[in-house]
Image (cartoon, rainbow over all chains, first blue to last red; front, side):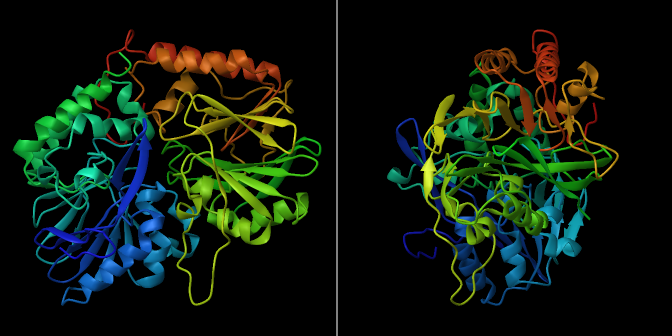
Length: 261
Length: 290
Protein backbone atom coordinates (compact mmCIF):
# COMPACT_ATOMS: atom_id res chain seq x y z
CA UNK A 1 0.00 0.00 0.00
CA UNK A 2 1.42 3.40 -0.99
CA UNK A 3 0.75 6.19 1.47
CA UNK A 4 0.92 9.88 0.63
CA UNK A 5 -0.44 12.77 2.68
CA UNK A 6 -2.45 10.37 4.83
CA UNK A 7 -4.18 8.86 1.82
CA UNK A 8 -4.25 5.05 1.92
CA UNK A 9 -4.75 4.72 -1.84
CA UNK A 10 -3.82 3.48 -4.37
CA UNK A 11 -4.28 -0.13 -3.43
CA UNK A 12 -4.27 -3.25 -5.61
CA UNK A 13 -7.43 -5.08 -4.49
CA UNK A 14 -7.06 -7.97 -6.95
CA UNK A 15 -4.46 -8.82 -9.58
CA UNK A 16 -4.44 -5.91 -12.03
CA UNK A 17 -7.16 -3.88 -10.27
CA UNK A 18 -5.96 -0.72 -8.55
CA UNK A 19 -8.30 1.25 -6.28
CA UNK A 20 -7.68 5.01 -6.74
CA UNK A 21 -8.91 8.20 -5.15
CA UNK A 22 -9.17 9.85 -1.77
CA UNK A 23 -11.81 10.30 0.91
CA UNK A 24 -14.52 12.95 0.93
CA UNK A 25 -15.73 14.17 4.30
CA UNK A 26 -19.51 14.15 4.85
CA UNK A 27 -21.57 15.50 7.72
CA UNK A 28 -24.65 13.49 8.63
CA UNK A 29 -26.80 13.95 11.73
CA UNK A 30 -23.99 15.61 13.63
CA UNK A 31 -21.41 12.96 12.72
CA UNK A 32 -18.47 13.21 10.36
CA UNK A 33 -18.25 10.36 7.89
CA UNK A 34 -15.87 9.65 5.03
CA UNK A 35 -16.81 8.22 1.68
CA UNK A 36 -15.11 7.53 -1.62
CA UNK A 37 -15.77 8.72 -5.14
CA UNK A 38 -13.29 6.17 -6.36
CA UNK A 39 -11.81 5.26 -9.70
CA UNK A 40 -10.25 1.90 -10.57
CA UNK A 41 -7.41 1.16 -12.94
CA UNK A 42 -7.79 -2.23 -14.62
CA UNK A 43 -4.69 -3.55 -16.38
CA UNK A 44 -4.70 -6.27 -19.03
CA UNK A 45 -1.93 -7.81 -21.10
CA UNK A 46 -2.27 -5.27 -23.90
CA UNK A 47 -3.89 -2.16 -22.47
CA UNK A 48 -5.34 -0.59 -19.36
CA UNK A 49 -8.75 0.88 -18.70
CA UNK A 50 -9.78 3.48 -16.15
CA UNK A 51 -13.19 2.85 -14.57
CA UNK A 52 -14.80 6.10 -13.37
CA UNK A 53 -12.88 9.38 -13.20
CA UNK A 54 -13.36 10.20 -9.53
CA UNK A 55 -14.65 13.38 -7.97
CA UNK A 56 -13.40 16.64 -9.52
CA UNK A 57 -11.53 17.45 -6.29
CA UNK A 58 -9.68 14.14 -6.41
CA UNK A 59 -8.51 14.28 -9.98
CA UNK A 60 -4.99 15.63 -9.32
CA UNK A 61 -4.49 12.81 -6.81
CA UNK A 62 -5.97 10.18 -9.11
CA UNK A 63 -3.80 11.45 -11.95
CA UNK A 64 -0.72 11.15 -9.75
CA UNK A 65 -1.71 7.63 -8.69
CA UNK A 66 -2.32 6.56 -12.28
CA UNK A 67 0.97 7.94 -13.55
CA UNK A 68 2.81 6.16 -10.77
CA UNK A 69 1.14 2.79 -11.45
CA UNK A 70 1.39 3.02 -15.23
CA UNK A 71 5.07 3.88 -15.00
CA UNK A 72 5.76 0.46 -13.46
CA UNK A 73 5.72 -1.66 -16.61
CA UNK A 74 1.96 -1.61 -17.04
CA UNK A 75 0.26 -1.59 -20.46
CA UNK A 76 -0.81 1.84 -21.75
CA UNK A 77 -4.12 3.44 -20.85
CA UNK A 78 -6.39 3.14 -23.88
CA UNK A 79 -9.93 3.28 -22.49
CA UNK A 80 -12.14 5.00 -19.94
CA UNK A 81 -15.39 3.37 -18.78
CA UNK A 82 -17.88 5.50 -16.83
CA UNK A 83 -20.96 4.18 -15.02
CA UNK A 84 -23.06 7.34 -15.39
CA UNK A 85 -23.27 11.08 -15.86
CA UNK A 86 -23.03 12.47 -12.31
CA UNK A 87 -19.94 14.59 -11.70
CA UNK A 88 -18.47 12.44 -8.88
CA UNK A 89 -18.32 9.61 -11.43
CA UNK A 90 -17.55 11.39 -14.68
CA UNK A 91 -16.50 14.94 -13.81
CA UNK A 92 -12.87 14.17 -14.60
CA UNK A 93 -13.58 13.04 -18.18
CA UNK A 94 -12.12 16.16 -19.73
CA UNK A 95 -9.06 16.10 -17.51
CA UNK A 96 -8.36 12.43 -18.24
CA UNK A 97 -8.53 13.21 -21.96
CA UNK A 98 -6.30 16.26 -21.55
CA UNK A 99 -3.62 13.94 -20.15
CA UNK A 100 -4.30 10.86 -22.30
CA UNK A 101 -5.71 12.42 -25.47
CA UNK A 102 -5.89 9.23 -27.55
CA UNK A 103 -8.08 7.09 -25.31
CA UNK A 104 -11.72 6.24 -25.99
CA UNK A 105 -14.61 6.77 -23.56
CA UNK A 106 -17.12 3.94 -23.03
CA UNK A 107 -20.45 3.45 -21.30
CA UNK A 108 -23.85 4.97 -21.94
CA UNK A 109 -22.38 8.20 -23.25
CA UNK A 110 -25.50 10.38 -22.98
CA UNK A 111 -24.88 14.04 -22.08
CA UNK A 112 -21.09 13.92 -22.45
CA UNK A 113 -21.30 15.60 -25.88
CA UNK A 114 -22.82 18.59 -24.04
CA UNK A 115 -20.53 18.54 -21.01
CA UNK A 116 -17.30 17.77 -22.90
CA UNK A 117 -17.97 18.87 -26.50
CA UNK A 118 -14.28 18.85 -27.42
CA UNK A 119 -14.15 15.09 -26.93
CA UNK A 120 -17.39 13.91 -28.52
CA UNK A 121 -15.55 12.02 -31.29
CA UNK A 122 -14.02 9.76 -28.63
CA UNK A 123 -17.33 8.66 -27.09
CA UNK A 124 -18.21 5.02 -27.75
CA UNK A 125 -21.66 3.96 -26.64
CA UNK A 126 -22.16 0.60 -24.92
CA UNK A 127 -25.21 -1.47 -24.12
CA UNK A 128 -25.56 -4.36 -21.71
CA UNK A 129 -23.43 -7.23 -23.01
CA UNK A 130 -20.93 -5.12 -24.96
CA UNK A 131 -17.27 -5.90 -24.20
CA UNK A 132 -13.88 -4.22 -24.17
CA UNK A 133 -10.92 -6.59 -24.56
CA UNK A 134 -7.70 -5.42 -22.90
CA UNK A 135 -5.77 -8.64 -23.36
CA UNK A 136 -6.32 -11.62 -21.11
CA UNK A 137 -9.43 -10.11 -19.61
CA UNK A 138 -12.55 -8.33 -20.76
CA UNK A 139 -14.69 -5.61 -19.28
CA UNK A 140 -18.36 -6.32 -19.96
CA UNK A 141 -21.21 -3.81 -19.58
CA UNK A 142 -23.84 -5.30 -17.27
CA UNK A 143 -27.28 -4.44 -15.92
CA UNK A 144 -27.14 -1.57 -13.37
CA UNK A 145 -29.43 -3.05 -10.76
CA UNK A 146 -29.18 -0.22 -8.21
CA UNK A 147 -28.80 3.07 -10.04
CA UNK A 148 -29.99 6.64 -10.23
CA UNK A 149 -29.91 8.03 -13.79
CA UNK A 150 -31.65 5.85 -16.38
CA UNK A 151 -28.44 5.95 -18.43
CA UNK A 152 -26.36 4.04 -15.88
CA UNK A 153 -24.33 0.92 -16.68
CA UNK A 154 -22.28 -1.37 -14.47
CA UNK A 155 -19.20 -3.29 -15.58
CA UNK A 156 -17.77 -6.74 -14.91
CA UNK A 157 -14.12 -7.76 -15.25
CA UNK A 158 -13.63 -11.35 -16.38
CA UNK A 159 -10.02 -11.41 -15.18
CA UNK A 160 -10.72 -11.26 -11.45
CA UNK A 161 -14.52 -11.70 -11.55
CA UNK A 162 -14.95 -8.20 -10.22
CA UNK A 163 -18.13 -6.17 -10.40
CA UNK A 164 -17.92 -2.38 -10.76
CA UNK A 165 -21.39 -1.30 -9.62
CA UNK A 166 -21.08 2.49 -9.62
CA UNK A 167 -23.76 3.69 -7.20
CA UNK A 168 -24.57 0.19 -6.03
CA UNK A 169 -22.99 -0.59 -2.64
CA UNK A 170 -22.94 3.16 -1.90
CA UNK A 171 -21.96 3.63 1.71
CA UNK A 172 -19.71 5.78 3.85
CA UNK A 173 -17.07 4.59 6.29
CA UNK A 174 -15.64 5.60 9.67
CA UNK A 175 -12.48 7.64 9.33
CA UNK A 176 -12.26 7.80 13.11
CA UNK A 177 -11.98 4.03 13.28
CA UNK A 178 -9.33 3.65 10.60
CA UNK A 179 -11.53 2.41 7.74
CA UNK A 180 -9.99 4.60 5.05
CA UNK A 181 -8.27 2.45 2.43
CA UNK A 182 -9.58 -0.80 3.89
CA UNK A 183 -11.81 -3.34 2.23
CA UNK A 184 -15.18 -3.96 3.87
CA UNK A 185 -14.05 -7.10 5.67
CA UNK A 186 -11.10 -5.28 7.25
CA UNK A 187 -13.36 -2.52 8.60
CA UNK A 188 -14.64 -4.59 11.49
CA UNK A 189 -16.70 -1.87 13.15
CA UNK A 190 -18.43 -0.84 9.92
CA UNK A 191 -22.19 -0.79 10.49
CA UNK A 192 -23.57 -1.12 6.98
CA UNK A 193 -27.09 -0.19 8.05
CA UNK A 194 -25.76 3.09 9.43
CA UNK A 195 -23.45 3.99 6.56
CA UNK A 196 -25.90 3.02 3.80
CA UNK A 197 -28.33 5.50 5.38
CA UNK A 198 -25.91 8.38 4.84
CA UNK A 199 -26.01 7.83 1.09
CA UNK A 200 -29.69 7.03 0.99
CA UNK A 201 -30.53 10.44 2.41
CA UNK A 202 -28.17 12.33 0.15
CA UNK A 203 -27.86 10.48 -3.11
CA UNK A 204 -30.14 7.49 -3.39
CA UNK A 205 -33.36 8.91 -1.99
CA UNK A 206 -35.47 6.51 -4.03
CA UNK A 207 -34.15 3.55 -2.07
CA UNK A 208 -36.03 4.87 0.96
CA UNK A 209 -39.37 4.81 -0.86
CA UNK A 210 -39.62 1.35 -2.31
CA UNK A 211 -39.32 -2.32 -1.42
CA UNK A 212 -35.60 -2.96 -1.69
CA UNK A 213 -36.04 -6.73 -1.39
CA UNK A 214 -36.78 -6.69 -5.11
CA UNK A 215 -33.53 -4.97 -5.94
CA UNK A 216 -31.40 -7.01 -3.56
CA UNK A 217 -32.86 -10.22 -5.01
CA UNK A 218 -31.98 -9.03 -8.50
CA UNK A 219 -28.52 -7.97 -7.36
CA UNK A 220 -27.83 -11.40 -5.90
CA UNK A 221 -29.18 -13.04 -9.03
CA UNK A 222 -26.84 -10.98 -11.20
CA UNK A 223 -23.87 -11.70 -8.96
CA UNK A 224 -24.59 -15.44 -9.04
CA UNK A 225 -24.97 -15.40 -12.81
CA UNK A 226 -21.66 -13.58 -13.30
CA UNK A 227 -19.91 -15.55 -10.54
CA UNK A 228 -18.76 -12.32 -8.94
CA UNK A 229 -15.93 -12.70 -6.43
CA UNK A 230 -15.07 -9.07 -5.70
CA UNK A 231 -17.18 -5.91 -5.69
CA UNK A 232 -15.45 -2.60 -6.43
CA UNK A 233 -17.99 0.15 -5.72
CA UNK A 234 -17.43 3.82 -6.46
CA UNK A 235 -18.52 5.03 -3.03
CA UNK A 236 -18.23 2.10 -0.66
CA UNK A 237 -15.30 0.01 0.50
CA UNK A 238 -14.48 -2.89 -1.83
CA UNK A 239 -16.02 -6.21 -0.89
CA UNK A 240 -13.65 -9.17 -1.11
CA UNK A 241 -15.58 -11.79 0.89
CA UNK A 242 -19.11 -11.95 -0.43
CA UNK A 243 -20.26 -14.64 1.97
CA UNK A 244 -19.31 -12.48 4.93
CA UNK A 245 -20.48 -9.09 3.67
CA UNK A 246 -23.47 -9.63 1.37
CA UNK A 247 -25.88 -10.53 4.19
CA UNK A 248 -25.03 -7.22 5.86
CA UNK A 249 -25.51 -5.34 2.58
CA UNK A 250 -28.89 -6.99 2.14
CA UNK A 251 -29.94 -6.06 5.66
CA UNK A 252 -28.82 -2.46 5.23
CA UNK A 253 -30.46 -1.96 1.83
CA UNK A 254 -33.74 -3.51 2.92
CA UNK A 255 -33.90 -1.33 6.00
CA UNK A 256 -33.58 1.73 3.72
CA UNK A 257 -36.68 0.66 1.87
CA UNK A 258 -38.58 0.62 5.12
CA UNK A 259 -37.84 4.22 6.07
CA UNK A 260 -41.09 5.54 4.66
CA UNK A 261 -43.32 2.57 5.31
CA UNK B 1 -26.01 23.08 -33.47
CA UNK B 2 -27.88 24.87 -30.73
CA UNK B 3 -30.30 27.79 -30.69
CA UNK B 4 -29.91 30.38 -27.96
CA UNK B 5 -32.64 32.72 -26.80
CA UNK B 6 -33.65 34.78 -23.78
CA UNK B 7 -37.17 34.98 -22.39
CA UNK B 8 -38.06 37.97 -20.25
CA UNK B 9 -40.30 36.57 -17.52
CA UNK B 10 -40.50 39.77 -15.45
CA UNK B 11 -38.99 42.91 -16.92
CA UNK B 12 -35.77 43.81 -15.17
CA UNK B 13 -36.19 40.99 -12.67
CA UNK B 14 -36.25 37.49 -14.13
CA UNK B 15 -34.85 36.13 -17.40
CA UNK B 16 -34.64 32.62 -18.79
CA UNK B 17 -31.52 31.75 -20.76
CA UNK B 18 -32.43 28.96 -23.19
CA UNK B 19 -29.88 26.89 -25.07
CA UNK B 20 -31.20 23.97 -27.02
CA UNK B 21 -30.07 20.41 -27.56
CA UNK B 22 -31.38 17.71 -29.83
CA UNK B 23 -33.40 14.89 -28.33
CA UNK B 24 -31.80 11.89 -29.99
CA UNK B 25 -31.81 9.25 -27.25
CA UNK B 26 -28.61 10.67 -25.79
CA UNK B 27 -30.00 13.05 -23.17
CA UNK B 28 -30.32 11.47 -19.74
CA UNK B 29 -33.07 13.86 -18.62
CA UNK B 30 -35.44 12.78 -21.40
CA UNK B 31 -36.95 9.47 -22.47
CA UNK B 32 -34.71 7.53 -24.81
CA UNK B 33 -37.35 7.60 -27.52
CA UNK B 34 -38.13 11.33 -27.28
CA UNK B 35 -37.31 13.13 -30.52
CA UNK B 36 -37.17 16.85 -31.27
CA UNK B 37 -35.54 19.63 -29.32
CA UNK B 38 -35.53 21.02 -25.83
CA UNK B 39 -33.60 23.77 -24.06
CA UNK B 40 -31.46 23.68 -20.97
CA UNK B 41 -32.72 26.68 -18.99
CA UNK B 42 -30.64 28.82 -16.67
CA UNK B 43 -32.45 31.61 -14.86
CA UNK B 44 -31.09 35.05 -14.04
CA UNK B 45 -32.77 36.89 -11.15
CA UNK B 46 -31.87 40.57 -11.02
CA UNK B 47 -32.40 43.06 -8.24
CA UNK B 48 -31.23 46.65 -7.85
CA UNK B 49 -27.72 45.85 -6.68
CA UNK B 50 -27.31 42.13 -7.07
CA UNK B 51 -28.15 39.20 -9.28
CA UNK B 52 -28.49 35.44 -8.90
CA UNK B 53 -28.02 32.76 -11.54
CA UNK B 54 -29.82 29.45 -11.11
CA UNK B 55 -27.73 26.76 -12.84
CA UNK B 56 -24.89 27.47 -15.24
CA UNK B 57 -25.65 25.25 -18.25
CA UNK B 58 -23.61 22.78 -20.31
CA UNK B 59 -20.09 23.46 -21.57
CA UNK B 60 -21.38 23.16 -25.15
CA UNK B 61 -23.35 26.35 -24.48
CA UNK B 62 -20.63 28.24 -22.63
CA UNK B 63 -20.09 30.97 -25.23
CA UNK B 64 -23.81 31.55 -25.70
CA UNK B 65 -24.47 31.72 -21.96
CA UNK B 66 -21.67 34.22 -21.42
CA UNK B 67 -23.13 36.35 -24.22
CA UNK B 68 -26.62 36.08 -22.76
CA UNK B 69 -25.35 37.18 -19.38
CA UNK B 70 -23.39 40.02 -20.96
CA UNK B 71 -26.58 41.24 -22.63
CA UNK B 72 -28.43 41.39 -19.30
CA UNK B 73 -25.84 42.11 -16.65
CA UNK B 74 -23.16 44.65 -15.89
CA UNK B 75 -19.96 42.66 -15.35
CA UNK B 76 -19.38 44.47 -12.05
CA UNK B 77 -22.80 43.58 -10.65
CA UNK B 78 -22.41 41.25 -7.64
CA UNK B 79 -23.59 37.88 -8.90
CA UNK B 80 -24.36 34.77 -6.88
CA UNK B 81 -24.56 31.35 -8.49
CA UNK B 82 -26.94 28.66 -7.27
CA UNK B 83 -26.55 25.22 -8.88
CA UNK B 84 -29.78 23.38 -8.13
CA UNK B 85 -28.22 19.91 -8.61
CA UNK B 86 -24.59 20.02 -7.56
CA UNK B 87 -23.87 16.58 -9.10
CA UNK B 88 -25.23 17.31 -12.57
CA UNK B 89 -23.35 18.83 -15.47
CA UNK B 90 -26.23 21.05 -16.54
CA UNK B 91 -26.09 22.81 -13.17
CA UNK B 92 -22.34 23.29 -12.79
CA UNK B 93 -20.42 23.08 -16.07
CA UNK B 94 -19.97 26.83 -16.61
CA UNK B 95 -19.49 27.95 -13.02
CA UNK B 96 -15.79 28.72 -13.46
CA UNK B 97 -16.22 30.29 -16.90
CA UNK B 98 -18.86 32.65 -15.51
CA UNK B 99 -16.73 33.45 -12.45
CA UNK B 100 -13.84 34.40 -14.73
CA UNK B 101 -15.91 37.01 -16.57
CA UNK B 102 -18.42 38.24 -13.97
CA UNK B 103 -18.26 39.45 -10.39
CA UNK B 104 -19.29 36.19 -8.72
CA UNK B 105 -19.41 36.96 -5.01
CA UNK B 106 -20.77 33.67 -3.72
CA UNK B 107 -22.09 30.25 -4.66
CA UNK B 108 -24.97 28.70 -2.78
CA UNK B 109 -24.50 25.04 -2.10
CA UNK B 110 -25.40 22.19 0.21
CA UNK B 111 -21.75 21.12 0.21
CA UNK B 112 -18.75 23.12 1.48
CA UNK B 113 -15.92 24.26 -0.80
CA UNK B 114 -17.90 24.37 -4.01
CA UNK B 115 -14.82 25.04 -6.13
CA UNK B 116 -13.88 21.41 -5.47
CA UNK B 117 -17.08 20.34 -7.25
CA UNK B 118 -16.94 22.54 -10.34
CA UNK B 119 -13.38 22.23 -11.63
CA UNK B 120 -13.40 20.30 -14.89
CA UNK B 121 -10.14 21.34 -16.51
CA UNK B 122 -6.53 20.71 -15.61
CA UNK B 123 -4.85 24.05 -15.06
CA UNK B 124 -1.46 24.55 -16.67
CA UNK B 125 1.48 26.69 -15.59
CA UNK B 126 0.45 29.92 -13.92
CA UNK B 127 -3.23 29.51 -14.75
CA UNK B 128 -5.48 29.86 -11.71
CA UNK B 129 -9.22 29.77 -11.26
CA UNK B 130 -11.14 32.39 -9.30
CA UNK B 131 -11.66 31.57 -5.65
CA UNK B 132 -15.35 30.95 -5.03
CA UNK B 133 -16.99 31.77 -1.73
CA UNK B 134 -19.40 29.03 -0.69
CA UNK B 135 -22.55 29.94 1.20
CA UNK B 136 -24.02 26.77 2.66
CA UNK B 137 -27.75 26.28 2.44
CA UNK B 138 -29.35 23.92 4.91
CA UNK B 139 -30.47 20.38 4.25
CA UNK B 140 -33.87 20.98 5.81
CA UNK B 141 -37.11 21.17 3.89
CA UNK B 142 -36.88 24.93 3.48
CA UNK B 143 -34.46 27.77 4.01
CA UNK B 144 -34.24 31.33 2.75
CA UNK B 145 -31.65 33.50 1.14
CA UNK B 146 -31.94 37.11 0.07
CA UNK B 147 -31.17 38.71 -3.27
CA UNK B 148 -30.08 42.22 -2.42
CA UNK B 149 -31.48 43.47 0.85
CA UNK B 150 -35.14 42.53 0.60
CA UNK B 151 -35.92 40.02 -2.10
CA UNK B 152 -36.72 36.77 -0.38
CA UNK B 153 -35.74 33.59 -2.18
CA UNK B 154 -37.09 30.37 -0.69
CA UNK B 155 -34.82 27.36 -1.08
CA UNK B 156 -36.76 24.11 -1.02
CA UNK B 157 -35.58 20.54 -0.90
CA UNK B 158 -37.19 19.14 -4.04
CA UNK B 159 -40.15 17.09 -2.80
CA UNK B 160 -39.71 14.63 -5.67
CA UNK B 161 -36.14 13.96 -6.66
CA UNK B 162 -33.66 11.41 -7.86
CA UNK B 163 -30.53 13.03 -6.49
CA UNK B 164 -29.91 16.02 -4.24
CA UNK B 165 -32.05 18.74 -5.81
CA UNK B 166 -33.32 22.16 -4.79
CA UNK B 167 -36.39 24.01 -5.99
CA UNK B 168 -36.49 27.79 -5.68
CA UNK B 169 -39.49 30.04 -5.11
CA UNK B 170 -39.05 33.74 -5.83
CA UNK B 171 -41.73 35.58 -3.88
CA UNK B 172 -41.22 38.77 -5.89
CA UNK B 173 -42.06 37.17 -9.24
CA UNK B 174 -44.16 34.27 -7.90
CA UNK B 175 -42.13 31.87 -10.00
CA UNK B 176 -41.30 28.32 -8.94
CA UNK B 177 -37.98 27.16 -10.41
CA UNK B 178 -38.51 23.42 -10.47
CA UNK B 179 -35.18 22.06 -11.73
CA UNK B 180 -35.78 18.65 -13.35
CA UNK B 181 -39.54 18.47 -12.62
CA UNK B 182 -42.27 19.78 -14.98
CA UNK B 183 -39.68 19.53 -17.77
CA UNK B 184 -41.81 17.34 -20.04
CA UNK B 185 -42.83 19.80 -22.75
CA UNK B 186 -40.40 19.80 -25.65
CA UNK B 187 -40.84 20.68 -29.32
CA UNK B 188 -40.33 19.48 -32.88
CA UNK B 189 -38.72 22.84 -33.59
CA UNK B 190 -35.43 24.13 -32.26
CA UNK B 191 -36.54 27.77 -32.35
CA UNK B 192 -39.73 27.36 -30.32
CA UNK B 193 -40.72 30.16 -27.91
CA UNK B 194 -40.16 27.86 -24.88
CA UNK B 195 -43.02 29.31 -22.92
CA UNK B 196 -46.76 28.74 -22.85
CA UNK B 197 -48.97 31.63 -21.75
CA UNK B 198 -51.93 31.39 -19.42
CA UNK B 199 -54.43 31.38 -22.27
CA UNK B 200 -52.42 29.08 -24.51
CA UNK B 201 -52.99 25.36 -24.76
CA UNK B 202 -50.61 22.92 -23.12
CA UNK B 203 -50.14 20.40 -25.94
CA UNK B 204 -49.19 17.31 -23.94
CA UNK B 205 -49.87 17.39 -20.21
CA UNK B 206 -52.29 14.67 -19.21
CA UNK B 207 -52.20 11.62 -16.97
CA UNK B 208 -50.87 9.23 -19.59
CA UNK B 209 -48.13 11.52 -20.88
CA UNK B 210 -46.82 12.61 -17.47
CA UNK B 211 -46.91 9.04 -16.14
CA UNK B 212 -44.90 7.81 -19.10
CA UNK B 213 -42.47 10.74 -18.86
CA UNK B 214 -41.73 10.07 -15.20
CA UNK B 215 -41.29 6.33 -15.67
CA UNK B 216 -39.04 6.73 -18.72
CA UNK B 217 -36.74 9.31 -17.20
CA UNK B 218 -35.28 9.69 -13.75
CA UNK B 219 -38.38 8.47 -11.92
CA UNK B 220 -38.11 4.95 -13.38
CA UNK B 221 -38.28 3.59 -9.80
CA UNK B 222 -41.48 5.23 -8.65
CA UNK B 223 -44.04 2.63 -9.76
CA UNK B 224 -45.01 0.80 -6.59
CA UNK B 225 -43.10 3.16 -4.30
CA UNK B 226 -44.58 4.86 -1.26
CA UNK B 227 -45.64 8.05 -2.98
CA UNK B 228 -47.84 9.44 -0.20
CA UNK B 229 -44.97 11.27 1.57
CA UNK B 230 -43.87 12.65 -1.80
CA UNK B 231 -47.40 13.81 -2.65
CA UNK B 232 -47.73 15.45 0.76
CA UNK B 233 -44.46 17.33 0.30
CA UNK B 234 -45.47 18.51 -3.17
CA UNK B 235 -48.87 19.59 -1.91
CA UNK B 236 -47.25 21.50 0.92
CA UNK B 237 -45.29 23.60 -1.57
CA UNK B 238 -48.33 24.06 -3.80
CA UNK B 239 -50.41 25.24 -0.84
CA UNK B 240 -47.83 27.44 0.84
CA UNK B 241 -46.65 29.43 -2.16
CA UNK B 242 -48.63 31.55 -4.59
CA UNK B 243 -47.07 30.02 -7.69
CA UNK B 244 -48.01 31.79 -10.91
CA UNK B 245 -45.29 30.41 -13.20
CA UNK B 246 -43.39 27.12 -13.33
CA UNK B 247 -39.87 27.52 -14.69
CA UNK B 248 -38.18 24.12 -15.21
CA UNK B 249 -34.51 23.45 -15.81
CA UNK B 250 -35.32 21.86 -19.16
CA UNK B 251 -38.19 22.35 -21.57
CA UNK B 252 -41.02 24.84 -21.74
CA UNK B 253 -41.95 27.42 -19.10
CA UNK B 254 -45.58 27.37 -17.99
CA UNK B 255 -47.01 30.82 -17.29
CA UNK B 256 -50.25 31.53 -15.49
CA UNK B 257 -52.22 29.98 -12.69
CA UNK B 258 -54.27 27.74 -14.98
CA UNK B 259 -51.18 25.85 -16.02
CA UNK B 260 -49.83 25.71 -12.47
CA UNK B 261 -53.06 24.21 -11.17
CA UNK B 262 -53.18 21.67 -13.99
CA UNK B 263 -49.54 20.60 -13.63
CA UNK B 264 -49.81 19.95 -9.91
CA UNK B 265 -53.18 18.23 -10.34
CA UNK B 266 -51.94 15.84 -13.02
CA UNK B 267 -48.70 15.12 -11.14
CA UNK B 268 -50.64 14.30 -7.99
CA UNK B 269 -53.02 12.01 -9.88
CA UNK B 270 -50.12 10.16 -11.45
CA UNK B 271 -48.27 9.75 -8.16
CA UNK B 272 -51.43 8.61 -6.42
CA UNK B 273 -51.97 5.85 -8.99
CA UNK B 274 -48.31 4.81 -8.83
CA UNK B 275 -48.47 4.31 -5.07
CA UNK B 276 -47.94 0.85 -3.63
CA UNK B 277 -51.57 0.86 -2.52
CA UNK B 278 -52.56 0.49 -6.17
CA UNK B 279 -49.63 -1.27 -7.77
CA UNK B 280 -46.99 -3.59 -6.43
CA UNK B 281 -43.36 -2.69 -7.06
CA UNK B 282 -41.38 -4.80 -9.48
CA UNK B 283 -37.81 -4.75 -10.69
CA UNK B 284 -37.33 -2.23 -13.49
CA UNK B 285 -34.67 -3.31 -15.98
CA UNK B 286 -32.56 -0.65 -17.63
CA UNK B 287 -34.19 0.62 -20.79
CA UNK B 288 -37.71 -0.63 -20.02
CA UNK B 289 -40.13 1.65 -21.87
CA UNK B 290 -43.45 2.29 -20.18
